[in-house]
Image (cartoon, rainbow, N blue to C red; front, top):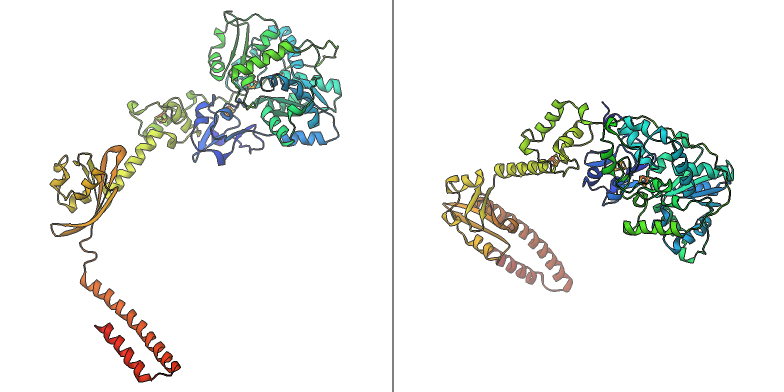
Length: 572
Ligand code: SF4
Ligand code: SF4
Ligand code: SF4
């Protein structure tokens, strides 16, 4: 059985998405949102298991501490630009979601300023992909430009691999087009909203298409670093050719079907477009034998690529959608004839690394339940606080080495309570807890021994047992903490009292001090030590006085008389 512990770990530089461990606060939100539970927790640290990860970037979007990060490719792109090779950039159509209005027309200039020789729109590739998809409709029923969906099928639903229409993504198609247009030596950088594209670009079969992938987040960071202000850039045009207006809708849910003029208004029985992790996972839960669709277009990000993890913006997703549509409507079409003969055939793999539940021995699940005090199904709260949907899912993950029993919050709370209960029950100091009416709710064994009582007095007012002065002061709010030495039945005790306002309770801590301090021999010892130190000081004073008297020419006898008077005073 594959497990998180028997897979070669990649270091962060090799992973497409990774955890910045210093930022991780163990909140398990990433575990909760990861659609394929590719995040393991060891020693309290959440880390991505690269083999299980489909690079959807959901954890990047959702982590409140920004501990999940998409690998940066900025250095690689800067290296390409400083090499002698010409570098073209392919900008994904979702750019219009964030670079809206006048910004869209100034972006080409800004990209040239960063050093790109050719600046083009990936929509060109999207148009070619749509045409090829229509031609290959007999070879499958799933058409998608989304590498996260492809990763998901390859890893978790391999039975659907053969149903993927074997056409490359717009990014790959455009990379090939640009290299064909500008020469093989031309490097191509894709800029888009997606984490999964970084992995897609390095698949061996795509080696002749894309040299590096940046996210829009990286682009914005780079423009800021270079102090390139779009407002100060002149307007310009992308060097994009063909009838690509509709293809500019590719980043929206249903964009591919729209580009291909395939009717899909939500009421078709056999044609469907969906987006979002839940819908994608739900769709592929259909057994292939029950699959009735002739064309389905799934995108992993909810709402499509305009909601990809590589877009950092506060802009409302519906505004982003409007921006993309208005850009597609306003843009102009070039009728320049271009060579579009490239190989668009995609290759898919059957990885099948699914860690599904049936692989786990039931006995081992029960062992986890036993260890975490959940053998009784009533104690399986299924609260989801650990990041898993149910206690059973959590137990399966523990068996697989993906989770730790300590992730169960109710279990940890119970452990902590048992621990503190044990401390209270075994401490040599007396502990008593009263309610807000000063009635006894709990006494530990040391308290019962100290004040010779038992649980028979639970519920009685504290005045039945002890002087109530301190408790009354706490109850009136005149003090927050009360401390005193008191005595009862020949015992002296130290009393420390405080309130628990949230619980409306009072706590009393009692230490028996009968034997400590009032021991006469101890006091004599302390007195004698004090006298010794005082005499030492006086000897020093006598010598000093004699020297001073001699120096001042006064009679030594007179000085000695003074010193003797000091000694007498001391003895008294
Ligand atoms: S990128 Fe997606 S699959 Fe990978 S760990 Fe994050 S949420 Fe899970
Ligand atoms: S929907 Fe788009 S941005 Fe999101 S994972 Fe798929 S391709 Fe990437
Ligand atoms: S009770 Fe514990 S194991 Fe079960 S779902 Fe809640 S946190 Fe997870």
